Amino acid sequence: MYEKIMIKTGLQHLDSIRDNRMIFLNGEVVGDVTSHPAFRNAAATVGRLYDFQAEAENIDLMTFPVPGKNIRVNRAWQLPRSYEELVERRKALTAWSQLHCGFMGRSPDHVASCVAAMAMGRDLFEQYGKGRGKALWDYYEFARDNDLYLAYVIIDPQADRSKATGEQQDEYLTAAICDEDNAGITVKGAKMLGTSAVFANEVLVASLRPMREGDARYAFTAAVPIGAKGLKLLSRKSYEGAAESRFDYPLSTMFDENDAIVYFDEVKIPWERVFVHRNPAMSHAQFHTTPAHSYQNYQAQIRLAVKLRYLAGLAHRICETIGTIDFPQVREILGIIAAKVGMIEAGVHAMEVKGIYYGPYFVPDRALLYAAGALAQQYYPEIVSAVRELAGGGVIMLPSSVRDFANPEIAALIGKTQLSANTDAPGRVKLFKLAWDSVGSEFASRHAQYEMFYSGARHFTVGNAFKTFNWKEATDLVDRVTSQYELTSGGRQDL
Ligand SMILES: Cc1cc2nc3c(=O)[nH]c(=O)nc-3n(C[C@H](O)[C@H](O)[C@H](O)COP(=O)(O)OP(=O)(O)OC[C@H]3O[C@@H](n4cnc5c(N)ncnc54)[C@H](O)[C@@H]3O)c2cc1C
Image (cartoon, rainbow, N blue to C red; front, side, top):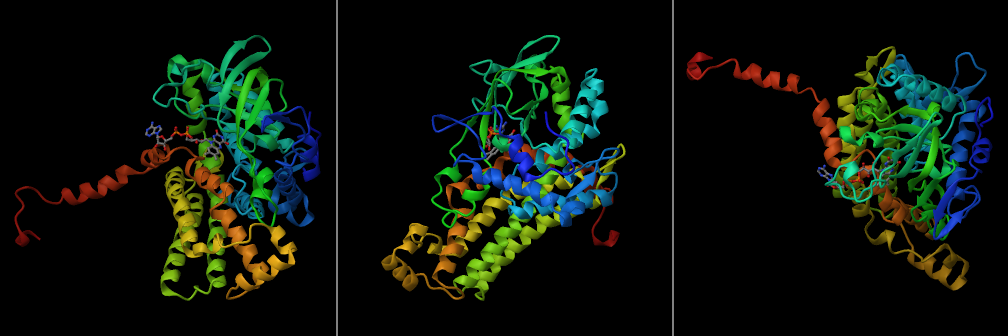
């Protein structure tokens, strides 16, 4: 289906997503996402990621040679066998994130990280279901060798959270196996929330949440091409489509990665693309016993570290522009931003240093990963709020659109009113439009929601931090103190 390539380029990716994909937006079916006004710039951004890895000076940084094959693919597919290889891989992920300042949350390296780490645990897939481990490994090789862009949907649609998957009003609210035969399974129902699915080659469908034994038909994992018959994407509003211009909305226009409900309208999936079959225990184990959940969230922390660094830079520029940079109170707020960014960066480095072996593969430390994830969820809205506090009304005191500059009378008034400490009127307007699109616009608001939820609601992320922390080491310290005295121990003379 996909042509073998030396190193995937943007053009090749964009060609590969011009297929029969069924995307609904604003009451219509979207045709070609690479040219549609709601998607084309974000599609081009994805294309630029692949072009970047194919540029001669970036090939070593971004790609690795596939053993025994004449191809190089993105390092996200690499299965590190040492601390050094993990770090090498991280540098590639960081370089990609820098191209979008961390705003493409589900860039191709996210789900690739998850699938690569599932492949590290292929024996477990085989133990749970004969042939499933082989199917998973073959798929990993296929996706890796073609450097596929994968999205995933691993959460049931939010309906009634007080009920289990199989207890919802409609038994096919959540995607379930509705039929199966010698060729494979047929799947019907929905999953949330296919971020970037409109730009991806394929979607991995699975269940992250624990499931009851009686809900086995929901407990499957499979890979499906986005253009597969019956697969429908119900897109949210496009911020790119609604944006006036790049000058007015520099991020909305370029980095709107999209989120869509994925609906499986009786989609047939062949057995060689089914990795978990009617198995609630394995549905859970595929993420938590293999390093899949660690690797996907490790990628997310690497990306987030870049995004927070960008927000810190933005905060600093705002303060320079409005002349507040030397005020002690302002420096205190900037210092707190810097400290939080530093903690997320430190978390990435620490989870690598404390990494452990899973079979022959080197994986980041889970306890530190979940600690960083829980804090990141809290830090993101706090940092956004700090940037807004530093910016004051400057992000609102702005011309209505770039078209105002084309009217000489309005342009003259903009020149008189948009004054600042370090730049001219267009420079000030440019920075504050960017600031608003980073922390205030609908696009920015979606990002706050993304960072607060992409890795699960708070009870889930904090629960993971609770489960993986070394409580014994902690409580041993307490016990060491209490073991040194008794009820009968006396006062100071016993010391
Ligand atoms: C922008 C965005 C992009 C996303 N992209 C993807 C994606 O690409 N792929 C994917 O699979 N998923 C994606 N998601 C979904 C994401 O994984 C979920 O939002 C997340 O798991 C939380 O589930 P939920 O949204 O249904 O919230 P819920 O689980 O319904 O939680 C909502 C709130 O209800 C409360 N609550 C609910 N249940 C409990 C409980 N048991 N105990 C205590 N409190 C509870 C909490 O206060 C919680 O904050 C995305 C989400 C967002 C917002």
